[in-house]
Image (cartoon, rainbow, N blue to C red; front, side, top):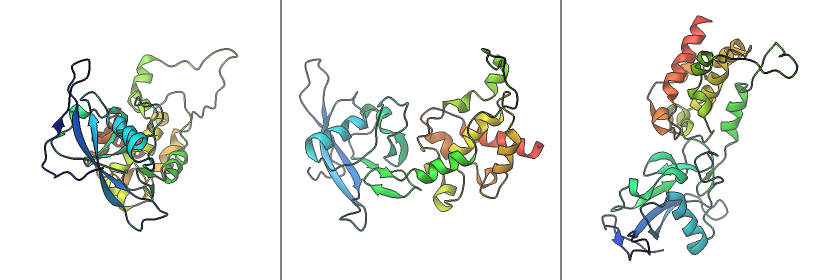
Length: 255
């Protein structure tokens, strides 16, 4: 762990056997230990990285080789579990999907926990409020009919396409924690909860769409959205979240 001037370029290192050039990259991480700190603090680390490495690889090297107290969440490391959402250079991203070559390594890379949720330690936040909103919109199929024994509920390709985009959500909270309304109003359901409600509201096999629309037709529901598109830009799965929220608003008005 060393101090590096903010404008110092990344120092090239010797290439490995494959001929790929490595670089000494400075990561400045916002640390917080509730047992010893009253406020978060920024700590910098120099890490040898290859352009094809990911920010998650850097966090692993810091934890395994430099400072074992660094705390963060991660699981699959392939952009499916959604565990490692964090702010990287001021933008919500998945650490496992953010390549070093896509960042400006001539400057330090800033890493901090996502905003709007209670900070527990270092890059870990309390996800309970996020999942509480998720559960409140009843994100599961509720059908009054029963399919024939051994048969599935049939759905056309056209009907499936209506909500296809919102099935991609991995509950990483990158969208919700990028929302300025959520930052200032902890009661707002948030984009992720609305996206998951959308997935069932528009499912032709579901019979509880009106129930979810009533839940979201609330002062802390879809009408709190200010259409800033932060959520859409933050989504690592490319979901058109703002569009989905607008479709739910239209469904509320029709109902």
